[in-house]
Image 1 (cartoon, protein in one colour):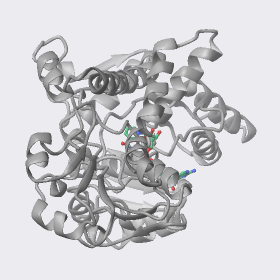
Image 2: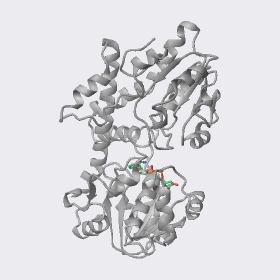
Image 3: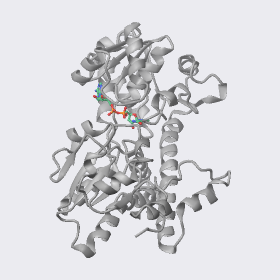
Image 4: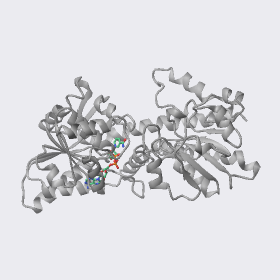
Length: 445
Ligand code: NAD
């Protein structure tokens, strides 16, 4: 099938590479010429395990092409995926300017029938809006070319995106048109081989499904973080509590890890967007609002622990903190809405120096937050420790899980660890002579 994918970020590029791998002919369009240049050279501009090989192989075999020219990209395509960003607007609502710009351009330059697929996460009603924009542009040109607009939200997660796309839990197709559904079923057949995996539903239900899924996952995270905060105060241990509740099959173990709050490019903005959509329709989404509120508090919890520890010794000003991890989670270079950035901003504003290291997000962090005064981004996990007053672990990278504590002790000025991901065992840390503070467990001082 000839397919065009507009937007070559985490979602667009992964979708493109996976569709190409199944033998389809894919043309990717991105407004950023630098990105297109990089991709044409067989390299990728984001970190995503397994993606570079897939892109390289399919480009070499002639199934994957890249351009900045949308007219060229859609010329032979039967299906056009819109996978551009939908960031949070200033009022928390979803900013649809990129999606609308693509719809306008498609309407301006399409010369044959198209199925336009909203893959970006967009509020309920966006497919109708995209349909209206394309129709408006066609009318301006006095053209009467048939087209359809479908919602096909994406559920992949950064860090495991290729695997998620190749073996999805489900594929949601929102359309009332049977012919359109058949085209998408054909395209997705290699990924959703068991029939139940491809769920066809109304367009608005499909748009809502994506928000409901992300809000449910965010709710689980905020729930366990709230439980963790109560555990700390009442003398309980959240790791034990998690084991106790996760064993109930109605609850399950997944997504109930306490930590420094959720970040990234999806949960924070999608939670806010659903609150905003509900409000537009006169409904106050109290539970989802609380999920957001709890998360905002949680993102500051590690900084609070660090401030509280140093308070009796004159505060954090002039001290140095070694930080492991900047990315919002392991296996990605994405630092959008990362808790680390919030902690860095808060503590450096109080005069603390931060030396941070991330296995893959350093470069991105230098570009985006490298100018924060008091922040130094370093290229080695060990180098950040040298002479620092304490270590804070913020991202759950595997390489932080089993470090040489003897060496850490030698390098730090004093053996103090603030663990925002509960990677270490408090008893073992105590025995090793560390002061150790984690989430939802009793401190070892
Ligand atoms: P991204 O920011 O990584 O990539 C978006 C790309 O679109 C950029 O390369 C940008 O240059 C390009 N772009 C913007 N305007 C354009 C235009 N007019 N024409 C062509 N290209 C244009 O975004 P992402 O993380 O891939 O997310 C895309 C969408 O998918 C968002 O709605 C997001 O919420 C959703 N989503 C993301 C994830 C994820 O894990 N990142 C998962 C599921 C869904």
